[in-house]
Amino acid sequence: MRMTRHTGAAALPILAAIIAVLILLGVAYTWLSLSYDYSDGERAGYVQKFSHKGWICKTWEGDIALVNLPGQPAEIFSFSVRDEAVAEQINALIGKRVALTYEQHVGVPSTCFGETQYFVTAIRAVE
Image (cartoon, rainbow, N blue to C red; front, side, top):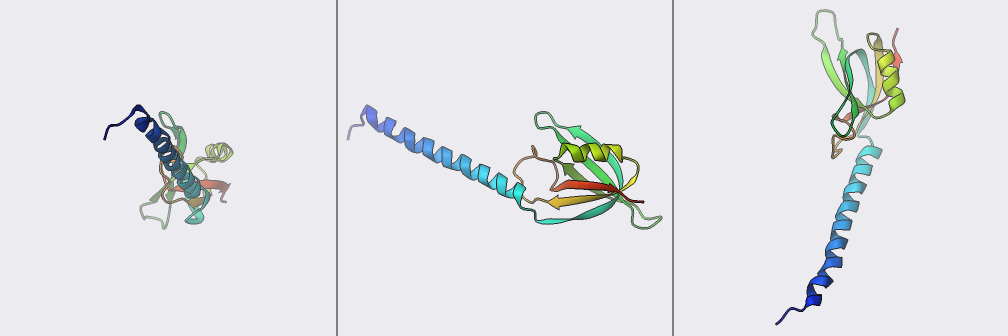
């Protein structure tokens, strides 16, 4: 059986459709992983580090030291911030005891949205 010039051209739209479906599935998965949270909660402590980092995808990343009891070593909780307004509030409250409200998003496929699973949505000073 001899292939004609048109045989290869017919496969091109099928290949393009498969690639388009794969891209749409990836976009849908990313949207779902960022839209629905696995858990949410609050952590209180002192912000130890907060920086805007990344080569291409700049994200706000930070660490908060959770102080349990005097004399005990502090547990470090790493977090990411997607909202610029929340990032400004955190920068203003560095060095003070704060409570961070966060959402945990499991399975986010890229670090372009944040390097951790924990995304801070609000911050308040704790007296």
